[in-house]
View 1 (cartoon, rainbow, N blue to C red):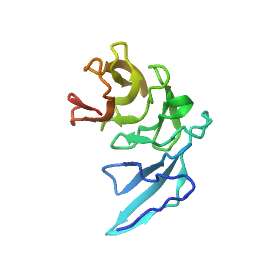
View 2 (cartoon, rainbow, N blue to C red):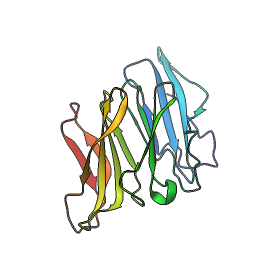
View 3 (cartoon, rainbow, N blue to C red):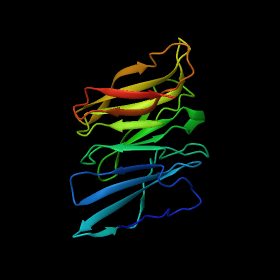
Length: 198
């Protein structure tokens, strides 16, 4: 057993989001601390016959984005099983408009995905990448739809390493204050999607 403490205590909510690489003895582990502007830290964690070793943290940033006091960078983190694609959400950025950044396993930025659903939607509050990295689901639970419902799920499909907008799912319950997209899950084949509305 081991534990990892917040390397920057001034940035709170460390551990609110976690991604762990699968199927390898030495794993990439990303931990979010989304209070205020937010922060994300990457660790290399290895298990050698029951002895767990944890590296010093690396700060994960999108160098093309200037975070503000309410960006909440690291609010959500998800990745493919092999960590080839890792998504980090920043739903509070730009007055709750939000964005999501995609990194590769080396933590090099692949793309920044801006909200396609307008302002105030908290795009990136939830992110989920399928186990193979084929699909990316991003929740924007605060966006107001034309039928007075709230929330959208934006679906991207991986095409030759680029996540391309595939479809947008709206809250199916009209005229309701429940926020569709607060949580997202799917089965192994990614052909059944479950979405909560709170």
